[in-house]
Length: 456
Image (cartoon, rainbow, N blue to C red; front, side):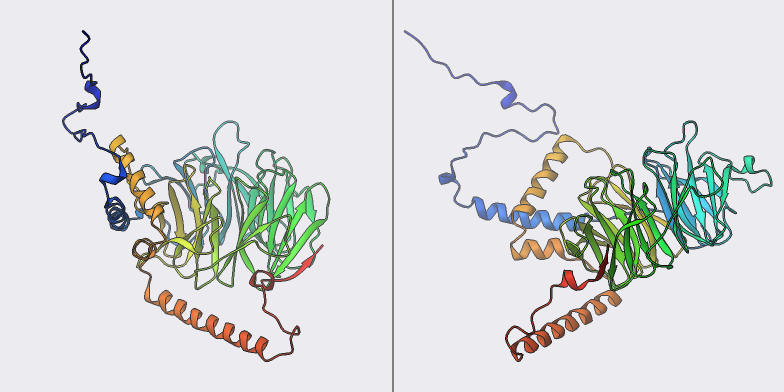
């Protein structure tokens, strides 16, 4: 005679420690749980509310500059180091972990510091380049003393280059080779650190000044620039000619390449929008990112390449998705003034912004994320809540809670005026098409109307 006994593992019913939740066996048959969808929807609404309750994006503020912060530069090799330059010519090196300044070069430039970039080819101690309105390019030691003395070596200054034809607007270093490019009042120039003059100057389509120049992270010979004639141009450093140029309706203030999809880039424009382009099709942007009510002054991609952050003259910071026309987050404070520069940290967790109120601010890339180590139980709970919100995001209650953001009264008023103007223009165009001869007047594609002309 055989006797069958029930056998259960103690791991399935015993808690590992006293703080764990008691494990309970549950029948997953849907016939025994007719209210499962209702309970799940209630949890989704609660999860959306909890996400907004714990949304505290501002981490801390870095004080020390005496004038507006115009440009920042994160380190490509360190999570802690950040370099900033102000309108009074001061350059500071910050330690983001300790929230303190490491080095301060108080007389780095005469006038605005217009460009900062890390020197990736530094073999010994880390260093960075800076350029300013005084027409100088300077190489600094990140670990320098920062003393304002007559001895350049004691001050941390390693090298200096003088541009004779005017002021400099931007600087960018090659990703792999030992060369850097500058944007000036007249041209885009390529420099070798071992020479005192530019090794190559690009002949542009006109005589307008160049505001921004950026190296492509993948194509080692490709450069992109924004000029004051509302143009966006591409250059091949192997030839002394421009490849293509696109004219927009207004001037672009900033340009950044996508680090993960290097054939794409985004520009911030004076018409309050950011435009995403593909170099294979410059006759129209593949996405228009809207939301700001004043000029977009700075853009920066996340290291993942899936989203980017913009800083605007309207004193706000917005985070856009790669394929999203509207922002998923908007950050602002009562004291923050016009935002001139924004940057992501290398670990994709923080955003650093510099504004006209002399402060650097560190924000969380995800407003409701917890700072610090998460327990496995917390991680599972957060993932479950995010999955619920994603599943029910089309429901009105969950959508309204997740998307609602409190904005300043001025931005809210300007946004409502803009919506009224847009609706009026659409009605006018509908009436024009309705009362015109068939085929003579049609509707306009907004992406195509953003481009004025394309020059080969």
